[in-house]
Length: 522
Image (cartoon, rainbow, N blue to C red; front, side, top):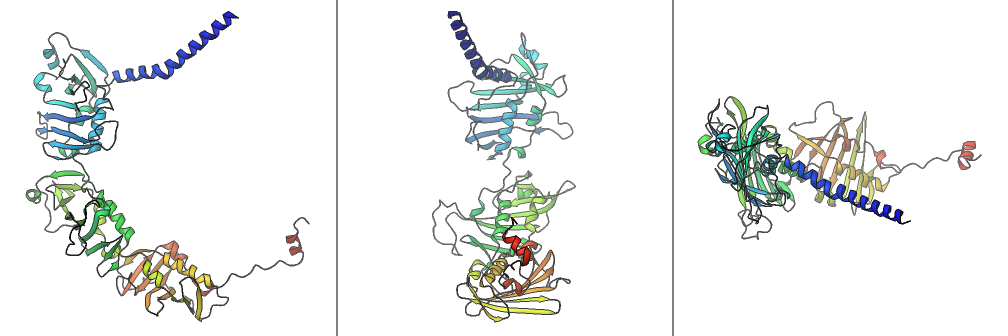
């Protein structure tokens, strides 16, 4: 019995040790082994204060000597385990840094795999020079990471880049913590050197604007199609003359605008270098914006248009076609900044919108829909026309006022109007008439309780291809307009007065079939 107890106790101890080793100790050992193969280990809980790259191409092969030196300091959220770090370039210029590029650089530098470690003994400086890590050479090709002063060591870490190694795709490097002895050389991937050979443009923040889409309260866009002016009042946008614009179209436009990125910074002296890039006398696109202050800023006196807020600013973006060497490029210039940036050509296509493209996309505004109390619906087919007029006191329950609609269903008018209000304009046309081959299908006259015309909609088309001829109403944007409709909602519109009839009752089956239907077991 005692022997069995000893064996049971031994098994418990063995199981506890196995659990401790597998769950606790083994991951620690594996992590330590993995870290030993890295160039250095960055503690994700520590905050980095500064990243400084001192690197110059002294050889000047093919392209002349280049200096890639840059110093970048962290302002907020500096722990590598955190997110949303705020970095700022402090040398050779002061500029917001590209957080993603800086974070990726630090992570990849620390994670560089060491394939071989070579101890240095005796004449250290003489031997280091053989790897391209002599004192004069290495001080000109290094990265220094400085941690915030948290009482931990090391405070500063220097990585020196030497010559290419004998093994293809590798180079020699040295690491020094707080000025300790450089007593070994590591072989690391050559991409580390490539990551140092980054122009200043790489380190600069690429996002051009620092405001939110909700802060834009006025825009004036000029392009080859003319000038479009848009003003925001409350939550809605308007064209001149208090004509409603399409909020969805403008929201999409602003979303693309505020997240617009530079491909590359090509100049920091726009006045001097405009001629260098062969800009035309006038920009291809010009956008003037008024940007309201954040909501936390209290209103002061009203501006000249009665809507300006304290701290509101105006900024202009000009987009130019030009050349960099012999290559055609698209460039951007901001009125309040001194740089010139190269832009993505496809990303600037949105600035070519025609004025009509910002127009309201539905037949009636919400306000006008609520006012509709009289509807005349006419339908056209081959050699026939039928029409009827309906009236309502509340816009929901309708009565037949004139015309013929046998077995009239009062709810059918409400349902038909719901479909009419939901029909969406895909695009406004510059054509004066509906394109040939699209016959008239239906016509709708919408009036208020006093008989004032709110809108006339004439629907034309064939299967899958629909147009509307519009006149009257706040959403018209003109006395008359031609618009192409989105196919699915247009196809759902009524095409005859039959749409307003009550559904016919289901006929009762007769004879033996009826009997079987009532008693299926027979």
